[in-house]
Image 1 (tube, one colour):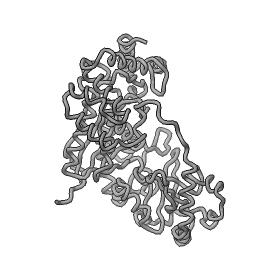
Image 2 (image 1 turned 90 degrees about the horizontal axis):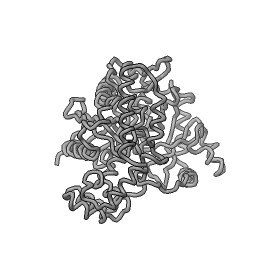
Image 3 (image 1 turned 60 degrees about the horizontal axis):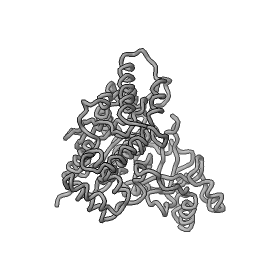
Image 4 (image 1 turned 135 degrees about the vertical axis):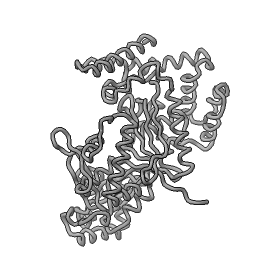
Length: 468
């Protein structure tokens, strides 16, 4: 069987808010391209707001998607999420996909994962089955540190370094007039990708290599040592690093040592002293995740690497070799990292519980059966899941899409659930909080007033149609 080609999928979302557990996606933009950025297919779709989700005014004043607030938007959130999942599966039939976002590993990807999970779909579609994911925000941290002559970084209104997508586009001669629309932001990413691949091909190569766990491990282990280039609070930082441990309870988390710290001194530290250096700001050891994009590059990928270093390559190589040869120290760090891990109580709400555990093989098969069954049969299948999370989510899907198939008691439970989200305090935005937020936005601008009035009407309708 011939090996599949690699294609890129540029993804962006617009949402009701910034809370990844209790906001929803209202628009998805997705562009499938070849490795040469030739456009193959496109998705641009919006959906209604779920009846239990309260829109955050700040989000709407940013993206201006008031069309999702009224009844003219016919597509349900359930249909939108199913369609994007199905389309990405179809695209993956002919290519291995690299899903590219901008700051998506902290936001868009996490929202998509949760909303696939809400609807009993595989949440890990973007980085399993030979697909990978990459975050251009992380790439631009590398570019800002090591490729500033080739690729321009953005500037904010004060002239400071900016990694906002629209600022980066404008700095590189791309109009960002349509920014904060999901599809338009995908177009900006495609155009920036073309420029980066042309002017900084080594950076793009490392970026795509880092879209898989294996690729990131290969980067970390590829040479004498690597360079970590970060942008924190508009300031650039470069560190020579070498991998020296792994989180035994989370294999995706790798410990790297800042080689400006002399390993010979670190080896002498007691456990409590090492713990103080582990994963803390300014400490000797940093944590990187190999299942996400890392701002890490091999020395050979940049010109004049010594110009970024405060010590000689020879000395840093010597320090890396000391770490490489001290297996006992590596094991010690890995064990200490487990001790440093915080334990958290289990999530209170099913919306938050995506990472509690993977579904059993039985529940995976039951999900497939659930999706291909009639709605009438779904009502019988919903109690067949082993995991209580999926029973609850299946009931929610039916209550949302086909409430007439549920008993009066089940529909009453669903109404109480909606009222809880709209009227009570919790980790979500409720109506009272949204109304208070909206009152703080004041402007005579006609577009601003249009958005404010649309939000006000939507919030009032939610109050009228539901009872506290």
